[in-house]
Amino acid sequence: MPKEWADHLALPPMVSHNTDPNATAFTVTCDHVDAGTGVSATHRALTITALSDPSTTSIHLRRPGHIFPLIARDGGVLVRRGHTEASVDLCKLSGLRPVGLLSELCNDDGTMMRLDDCLKFSKTHHIPIMSIEELVKYRMQLEQQERQQQQQQQ
Image 1 (tube, rainbow, N blue to C red):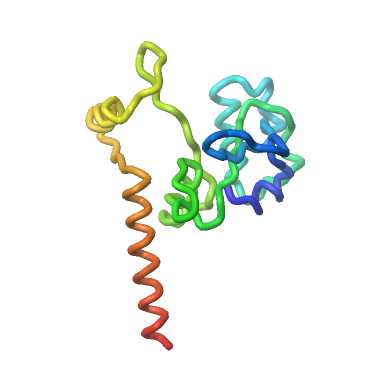
Image 2 (cartoon, rainbow, N blue to C red):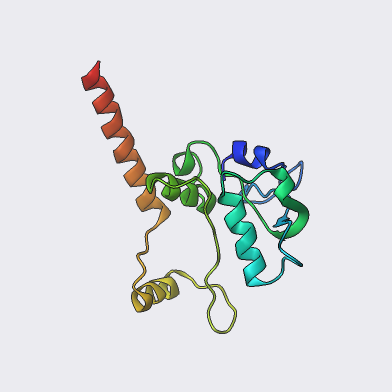
């Protein structure tokens, strides 16, 4: 989510000095106030839905919780080539609110799927797949087109 939305929801950074090698910007964890224990899939879905709902305010969330919101950098994947920024960019490009959901895909043995596994999963379930680099390329082309249109209008 954008920093402005995290601020609106009173979700400050989880730590004051982030030493994560990827500089992932975690906020404090949260649950929706109506999410019971917050542990179940239903409770987590309620929280995630609330995080993207424009009517949600800070009073609708309790802290700490079971959901780990992340703050995307302004400029998206053109500034930081991360999954957080990619999810927000894809939402914006789709005309949706800039709040995405990230989740790791796991193999049956509990290990995280790598690219080959993800490609198989994508094919089996007929789900499109793309890389962050493909998104960067698309964003760069789109911004170039927008600049050209602006120049033509001047």
